[in-house]
Length: 98
Image 1 (cartoon, rainbow, N blue to C red):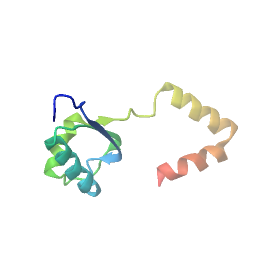
Image 2 (cartoon, one colour):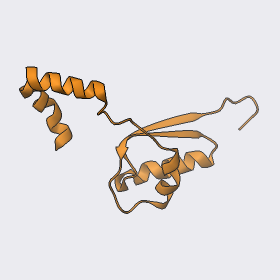
Image 3 (tube, helix red, strand yellow):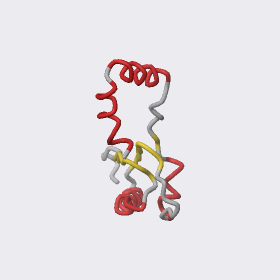
Image 4 (tube, rainbow, N blue to C red):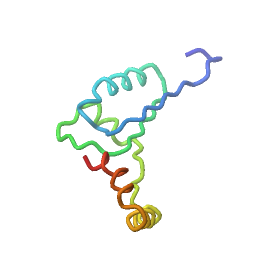
């Protein structure tokens, strides 16, 4: 990188990490790192795969995971919708439960 070039950074947002289905992304992240690109990985949740790619295991400590949505506010909101509109609540939660 030349002295005048600004630092480069890339962020990846993935559903789960680590995941066997993320092999392409992991290889891309490793290649970017070799080229002095700052890479940040954000995952919505932890992967459930028992077999983890070697590069994924090395990246795992730097992955930023989304906080669990079950705080006090979320519990109050769920209670409200459970009482006031249970059908709508079920409709919204159904994709996450499947």
